[in-house]
Image 1 (tube, helix red, strand yellow):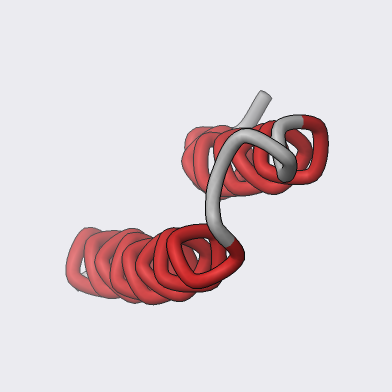
Image 2 (tube, rainbow, N blue to C red):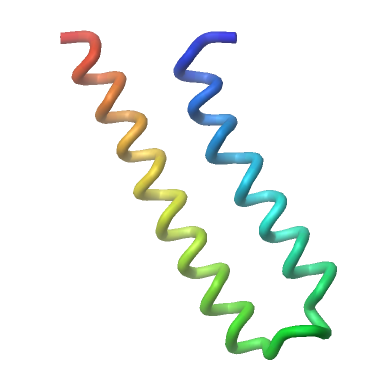
Amino acid sequence: MENRKFMYWLGVVPIVSWLLYFLGYSNKYKMEKIVEAVILIVILTVVYYISVMLYFKLLKR
């Protein structure tokens, strides 16, 4: 597998698993905490994807 694809998959798998976790255990947490966690996960995933994109752009130089 190409390194770039692998790095992107490393971002997809955790976000999907976290969303499934919160869906499965939604009765264990308050809705506010779930929303807060999902927002944080989405923000961190965007930062991760931007970092990967910049890394590979700088690598091509």
